[in-house]
Length: 342
Image (cartoon, rainbow, N blue to C red; front, side):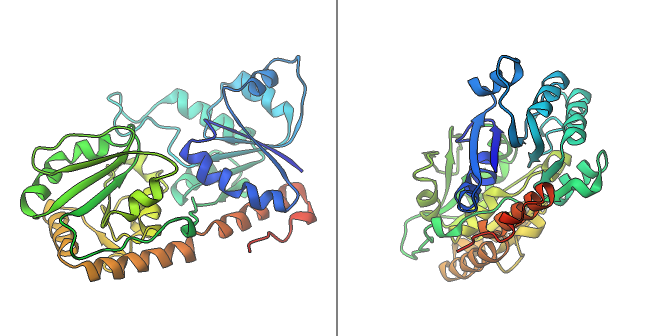
């Protein structure tokens, strides 16, 4: 079976965690997996009829193609799978024009209706897809993490600073900028705190020291293990409801306790008092940071509990089992009935 995945880029975070992570296991099962960017020469050869290569399975990840391009791709694939892990039918929380975008929604509807199978990253996204498509073709596969690739944080008691880590991109760091006053207050009221920013750009604070580490694939796991606490703040809106919580899973895989606000999947991923704290008000944020900053043993216990949760609830092996069930039902191919998970 030949699977072609169209993605934003091979190093994009969604491709790495939702497609590429499964490629070795799928190849063990006899599937040939080819990952190509939307902007590649292959894509344009598909769009223009000088090239008529037909894929057994075409996975389109997140992209909202115009209707004319979608029609051509639909003809090029025996089976079309649409995978998405964001509220891509809306504008982001930070867009000054607001969330609603009729053009995005129309293209999302076209993608869902044209696909043979739709893979959504959380329950909210599943509901959005089933509202406009056949409920039987919509499947939930959460973003999964291979915890074995993450070294555990040590939580040494004698470090001069307690590092509050945030990992993300320039598009999502705007969330930190929205809570600048809260972060400044943490810097003023919790002695020894430092914010570690792992991103493609940094930010400036007056009262909270910043340790900026440019994001690199080769170092992201070790940079997280060098921190003490993971933080995630999301705007409480419909865009955030579509988030699949990768940064929270990464923190927990690295053995960090997590402080987050109770928005979207963070309510499920962070177990209050066990793997971290779900907090809303500035006072609750300050109290949670202060408690964890003062107690490395508590950080270690919560971090290890989070690591176990990732290993039990979000392992790559569980994700590949879900993908195999989807492929088996789609293609009626008994050769992929038993995924190799060892």
